[in-house]
Figure 1 (spheres, rainbow over the protein chains, first blue to last red):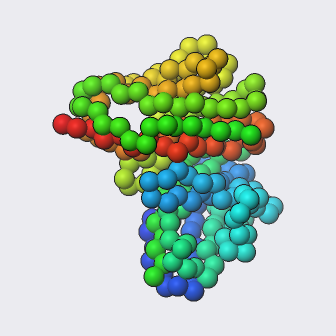
Figure 2 (tube, each protein chain N blue to C red):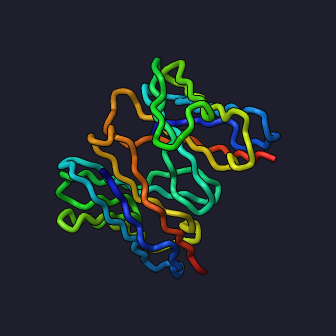
Amino acid sequence: GAVVSQHPSWVICKSGTSVKIECRSLDFQATTMFWYRQFPKQSLMLMATSNEGSKATYEQGVEKDKFLINHASLTLSTLTVTSAHPEDSSFYICSARPWDRVDTEAFFGQGTRLTVV
Amino acid sequence: AQKITQTQPGMFVQEKEAVTLDCTYDTSDPSYGLFWYKQPSSGEMIFLIYQGSYDQQNATEGRYSLNFQKARKSANLVISASQLGDSAMYFCAMRSRSNDYKLSFGAGTTVTVRA
């Protein structure tokens, strides 16, 4: 299967700072990547769809100025949590879809556990 | 709108026994795909099995099989011969063209396998 790498796997940051999370497709090109947030024992909540070369599409209720997404190349999307606060502490996970297989499964990164102190 | 329902928050199963995880869905799309993912405590999402809405036969992958009942809009996952390593959270998901092929997830079911 296709490989998606997410970095870092965990991060602890101080309140008020920004944190960048990277999502890379290692062996395929992804015009579309997805960012999810997951609280303990809960389901994955889609935050936004990252589109290569254009603006991300955010789901309702997700602050675009808080969660900045950049998809600068066909293999890399980044999520920046700006001015992080303790309530932003969560598990963030990305997925990517090969550009030529729109209707197939999405492949997931390993996830990032963010703790804001 | 799409909706995935998993009504079992948690289940216990004895090692070597089979377990069935329920999943029902709702969509108006004639064409859709159904997925099951496993999420162990490490957090990674592991793809288990896929069923297309037009597939005539139920999908099987090793110890995993999907009991697809299209008329009832259900896609239950059956894990046979449970192993301790099967202890994890399991998510049912669906994607369809009307939702731009984004995955919609159910609430998940936590499975604990007992020795």
